[in-house]
Length: 171
Image (cartoon, rainbow, N blue to C red; front, side, top):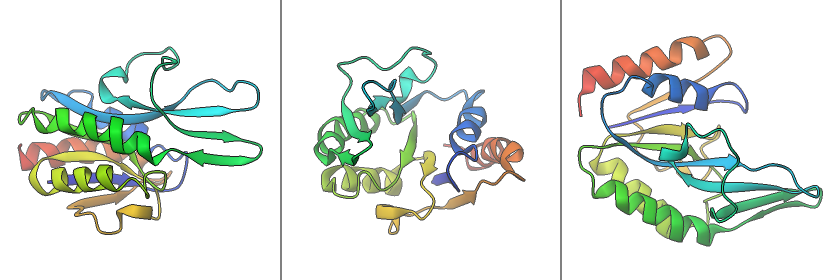
């Protein structure tokens, strides 16, 4: 079973996901991306385990960097998704009772074939919830059972819908 939020940037997809999972009794495992602080005009995007969600501090400097953004543009490191991302997904696969959370899937991992295959395998066999970038990017072929477009009008109800969906569809 898969349930994903999509929609425009900064509309509240990740916030709806976190709120929808806030009272979930199941263990959760997965991954998320988070920007570190801007330094010397550059922003690093880190690939992190879902378990760091509630930490307020910036990502550790040893955390895998999956992209860098600066005035010149963007540099993406698909090998980080293929190594670190696939390793996180392998850990998730080894915990059958866990809910798998992916925040977010998008265009950055379009050349990470190992990671892409691992995500699709989990989507076919496990309960996976998360966020996918608007337009779906490399995820056009993903088996989304429910793909809810979050907007300013429905973003406050999106979390409740996810909770209800998980309650109705069990594991």
